[in-house]
Amino acid sequence: MRIIILLFTAIITLGSCKNDPGNSNNAMESTSPQLERKPLSVPAFSADSAYLYLNKQLEFGPRIPNTNAHVETKDWLVTQLKKFTDKVNVQEFTANRFDRTKLNGYNIIGSVNPDQSRRVLLLAHWDTRFIADHAIDPANEGKGVMGADDGASGVAVLLEIARILKENPIDVGVDFLLTDLEDQGKSNDPDGVSWCLGAQYWAKNPHKSAYNANFGILLDMVGAKGAKFKKEQISLNYAPEILRYVWQLANSMGYGQYFINEKLSGGVVDDHMFINRIIGIPTIDIINKPTNNSFGDHWHTENDNIDIIDKSVLRAVGQVVTAVVYRFDANYL
Ligand SMILES: [Zn+2]
Image 1 (cartoon, rainbow, N blue to C red):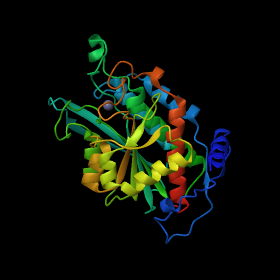
Image 2 (spheres, rainbow, N blue to C red):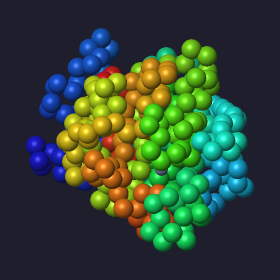
Image 3 (tube, rainbow, N blue to C red):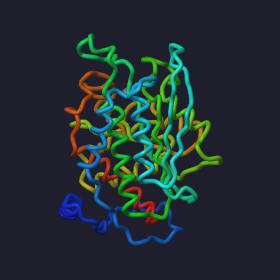
């Protein structure tokens, strides 16, 4: 088994498009027995391409709501998704920050095969936090967070997957939901509702009436060196099957150093919480949380910059999520 895994990883790294050798664990392959499997071919995820998409976002500066950088980034993201997807919706909305500052928000949704009923929701937030409230040097607190990891990494992985889908078409639908106003909340907010304002808005006002998806995957902080993705409690509560599928698949692909078979104690307030609760799409969160009480030393600090990013982590997450999408298309889940 070890040799097969290594071979599979090597094939992907070489950039060729090869048949997935499948998985010997039948327990994770039985969720859609009614649909006949199609030949499975999982394209290679390019970490170099994702890294460029990440860096481009940083060139705009911190993507803080009500700034020029925020609007310019929105326009760039719309342009990218228009290249790769069949339909792009931009939801403009306003929401009050916890201190009653009115924020201009933009949720951006790029849809592949928009009329297909079998579909996947992939999401990440694109805004960055307006204060670095865990800054190492307090002088940096007011500058906001650059968000190489917290914001740009998830979006970068999704843009690369969108590019892959354009080059390697599938039959199922995929929606790329880039949420805004995720990271403007209040520390120690007991119910978490001051966070994830864009996801809350979208879940109450989806871009399409009667919108549904079979499952959703949220990417948040998926690019930092030494990332550890553990099984988060809200994901386990609402979407246990997809969570176990993703972790087993990641481990079978050789990414067990990042996708850890451990539960986090307690849930994480993140976009998926509102997607699960409000619109009822079973959605998991792939989020770097090395310990039960820390998102890593760079989180909400001046150190969340390009130096923290590791292409190997982008590749692991990107290749796993790409494999999930193509496996879903081939009726493996
Ligand atoms: Zn954050």
